[in-house]
Each structure stands twice: as structure tokens, then as C-alpha cells.
Length: 325
Image (cartoon, rainbow, N blue to C red; front, side, top):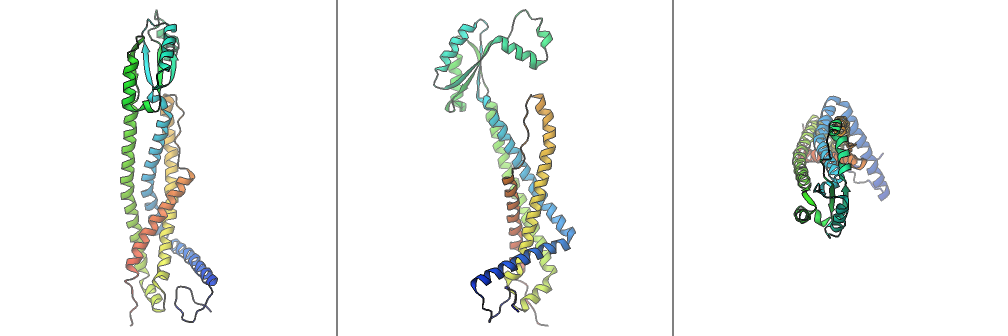
């Protein structure tokens, strides 16, 4: 009868395929066995998995926030538009002539015309003062041009120069550039990304330490058994594998818990956000983690679990040596 591959045997002669098959079977056995060890200590295992999952939930949720903030900023392409309010004395023919001149600007991509009547109609619909505006003798709102710069002219400095150039047109009363607040939004998003990286690094370190300590306690609880295994010829790598697999299982289960927590938070925030978006006549919906992002999260948790267990087993299993009574 052949001994397990983790034990040395001078007369053992196996083909390469047999060696690979035996090693694969041994890995599967130890992986399943390590899962059984976790099942036999449910309280400790559940607490460790929950700590790991909750620790990863915070940076994953912040990543979700940054992801949706970018999606919002991409939807607001009109934020780089320049609004030109024409003088009240400008008639529609003059406004059309102005549009043709502005369309010839190399910095301009598109010009949209909003007549005074259309502006008043939209204002009545959105302001809630529709009945009060009926008593006005004349339309107080001017015609408006929405000028969309080219991609190159959308930069802050170039857009400002274009605004000054457009304001010199004789039909223009006032111009407004809606780019500055978007720049602030992008700066805030960049700051949040840096915060996510910082908090994520600290939480990942804490996860490695927690799993390392859990594996250390498991090794100490099996100290006598490990000494006996070494006494009968088991190698350190053979003894280490179940503990490494335990770290991987902690990572898988913790990653799944984190995925579920993020999904629940996204669902909760979507309900709260829907009330806000209705006020702004928007149908924006929070995008949760995609399948690839969820798999990346679980894989990252596995890497953390393996790192914590590897650090622990390399230090503690080597220090355990069998002693003769």
C-alpha cells in the first residue's frame, strides 16, 4: 500500500503521470478536509468569515460609489455647454444669423437654439409658477443659445477663452459657463478614489492579520498532531497545505459575504436615491457590482486569506519539532 505523497519513502517509484495524479488527489483531499475542519468549529469560522466579509464591504462599497459617480459625470456631457442669453431686442432672424456665425467657430461643435417662447414654456412646467406667469404682459425670458465646444475646447482654460469670445457678439447679453462645478465634481471623485485606496489598504492589512492569527491558533491547537506527523516523516509543505487551504476557504466565503453585503447596500441606496432623482426628473439607477467585479472581489479575498495563512504557517509550523520522551 502506497503512503501519501507528503511522506518520504526511499523505495517509492512512480511514473510522472502517477505522481501528478497522486499529488492532485492529495490536494483535493486536503482542500475538502480543511473545509471540514472549518465546519467542525462553526463559531470561530463564522466570526472570521463575517469579519473578513465586512472588512471588504467598506472599500467595495466606496468603489461602487466612485463607479456610479463616474457614470453620472459621463451622462452630464451638457455640463460643458456654454449658455448664451440673448438680448430681449433680438428677433428670431437675428438669432439665426448669430447661430450661423457661431457654427463657423473652429472651437464649436454644436449650437442649440431655445426660443423665448420655448424657454417660458419649460420654465412654467418646471418652476410651479405656471398660473402666476399667465398674468405677465410680456415674456421676461430671453432666447438662449447652448453652445457645445469641441473636445479640445472643453478644457477649463480653452472654454473660458471661448466664452469671452462669444460674449463679444453684439446679440449676446450674457454668457455662462457650466464647467467649473463639473471640474469640482471630478476633483471630489479623485479625492474619494484616494480615500478608497487608503482605507482599502488598511482594511486589507487587518484582514491578513486576522486570518494569520486565526490560523496561528489552529496550528497551536494541533501542535501535538503536527509533531507526530513530522516524527513519521511528513514534510513541512505537506503539513502546511491544509492550513493554506483553510485561508483560501476563509477568503472565498468572506468574499461571498462581502458581495452579498454590497448588493444589499446598493439595493438600499437605490430606494433612497430614487426619491431624490424624481425631484430632478432623472431616472438614474445605481449600478451594482458586475459579475467580473464580484469575481475579482472574491479572488482578492482569497489572495488575502492565503497571504495571512502563509505568513502564519511559515513561522509557526517550522518552529514545531518532535521531541523524544
